[in-house]
Image: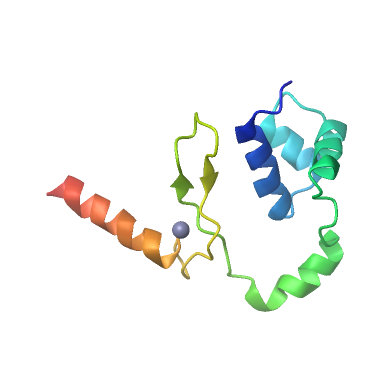
Amino acid sequence: MVWTDHRVDELKKLWNEGKTASQIADELGDVTRNAVIGKAHRLGLSSRPSPIKRKTFVLPTTNERMCQWPIGDPGETGFHFCDHVASAGRPYCHDHCVQAYRRKSESAA
Ligand SMILES: [Zn+2]
C-alpha cells in the first residue's frame, strides 16, 4: 500500500470529519486501521477532539456540513474538496452552488 497524495488527502478529510481509524481504513481500502493511525500521527492529525467531546461541541451546528465541491483532477496530485461550510440544505458552499447551478442551466440549454 502506497500513501499517494490523493490517499493522504482522503485520510485528512475523513479524519477531520471525525471518522474512526477503522472507518477510514474501510473507505480507503487496502490499508489497515493501524496504518491509518500511524499515518495520521505522522501527519500530526492525532490531536483532534475525542468523538464524545466533539459530539457535545458540534450539537448547536448539527446541520453545518463542508462543501463537497472537488478541486482539481481526482487522478492528480493536489486534488481535494472545497473546505468551506456548505449552504444550508446544499452539498456545496455558496460560491459552488452558484457554479453548480450555472453548469446545470448551461447543459440544459
Ligand atoms: Zn465550495
